[in-house]
Amino acid sequence: MITKIRDNIQGLSHPVYVTSPLLPSLRELAGYLKAIWKSKWVTNHGTFHGELETKLRILLDAGGISLFNNGAIALLAALRALDLPVGSEVITTPFTFPATPHCITWNRLKPVFCDIHPVSMTLDPESIEKAITPNTSAILGVHVYGIPCDVVKIQQIADRHNLKILYDAAHAFTTEVSGKPISHFGHISMFSFHATKLYNTIEGGCLAYSDPCYKNKIYYLRNFGIKNEDEVVDVGLNGKMNEIQAAIGLLNLNLFQKEKEKRLRIRSIYDAELDQIEGITIVKMPQGVTDSLQYYVIRINERLFGCSRNELYDRLKQFNVYSRKYFYPLCSEYEPYKDLPSSRPEYLPNANQIKNEVLCLPFYGDLGEKTARQIVKIIKAIRN
Ligand code: T4K
Image 1 (cartoon, rainbow, N blue to C red):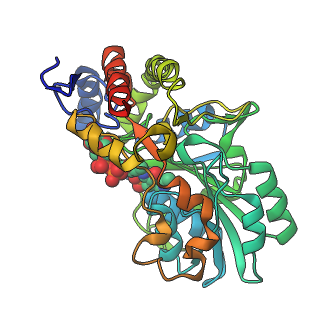
Image 2 (image 1 turned 30 degrees about the vertical axis):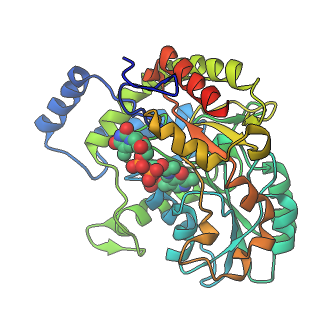
């Protein structure tokens, strides 16, 4: 397994990435494929699609669930479903994947970046308050790494200013806050089922909402606005999940709990070893929050650790460990957004600091406990 020796540190024999998709067995998948082939109903709200929507609605305890072909299109449709005035401002975080602000912009809305909390790394309620103008229509929070936004304070702010709340819960599948499912907060939540997510349909995602009024609206937005063969009632796009994706989703519903257990074991190895290293802070869930186990994130204090996050990231690669710097750079630094007034670094001090500290380590069930221990050894050796 171990092939390279550099500076007396043993590297991994093959590249190890930040994640690896959870896949059902080919034998089980073949059974589903046979059924799809037999029926010749391959997409457009098929049987497996319906079955998956029902099962997810129960699992996530949501009033309604609408499946999508990916998380970004789901988010795009969710913003549209909120009926926000064109050109109005949507307050969001710069510490996220580009899909978040892009969906705002595609809806002809204006993203306004707000700073994040120094510990939770989610939207800071105080910064939200300061960013509100008469043109603000909504708050789009991201439960980054599955850490919930300050949902209670955000609700209070939204109530005071009559704003809609949308949550990008791409990383927060099955997260609960004090026993309450994460999708119970805000008007609509988006979950991503991309291959890199703990629960996946290869590509896919869904919207979850409590108010049944969104069900029809989202249905039309997902399928060209088609109501029936004679009527098109909205400017919909094609966001439909196909039957093969839904079949993988059904099979992975049987696997994701086991995957969580395996990840818990990997997490405990990392926790036990990394907690003692000066300069490393392990990102942990706040009290009362169930961990979605989507990412294993550490923060590097360059002064105490002895090298920067970037140096650690580069050195790890030399040992076949491919960590990721999610979310560096900030979205506010990307070409389409860098000139926005809200992108100025002086308004986003926490985000600008945190972007240089975070590192997502390889984290998935099949990583193996031995490899996790070896990764820790490599990190310790790099530090010394
Ligand atoms: N909002 C947030 C907060 C998000 O994080 C995301 C997506 C979205 C919205 C949009 O949801 P989707 O439309 O994607 O459903 C990856 C994922 O593609 C993306 O879904 C995810 N967030 C983001 C954080 O990570 P990249 O560009 O980093 O992917 P990539 O291709 O570099 O893959 C990362 C690693 O995963 C690879 O180094 C190896 C492993 N991998 C990847 C793929 C695709 C595999 O082992 N097998 C694979 O098939 O974006």
